[in-house]
Amino acid sequence: MTKHTVSCGTLVLNSTGQLLLCHVTHTAAWDIPKGMRDPGETSLEAAMRELREEAGVVFEVERFIDLGEFDYRRDKGLHLFRVEAFDELGDLAQLACTSYFPHAKTGKPTLEMDDFRWAGREEISQLCWPRMGALLLTLDW
Image (tube, rainbow, N blue to C red):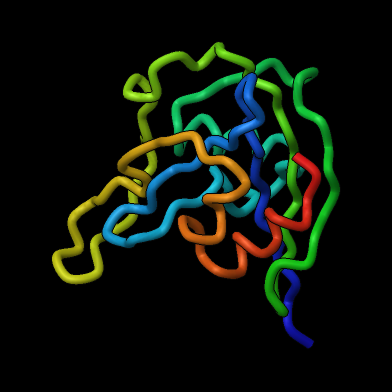
């Protein structure tokens, strides 16, 4: 039996209902801030940490709305939360990723996310990985 893992993420929405996306470094894809739970973390704690690490964004815990866990891949679930950011984030150029991965060729620490944008529902399937785009379009956000 394969171990079922859960990735935790947050749908951050602005006042016009657009979704915050992070550009995945060295790819053409954009994604929501998300990642795996650390040992002992709850899904909400993991989603809040990933949002802070990947975009530099922090919201009060009370603002996170639990959307539940969704099938994401055969071996992985995705637990999502939603936060209404309204216009609080201002210019997205102020956002910053602080989490790194080793570059595939050089091994040098490389930022996970290197840009940020708002995206409407009509843009999701062109911007996101196919599996993520399909899942996001099934949700009412």
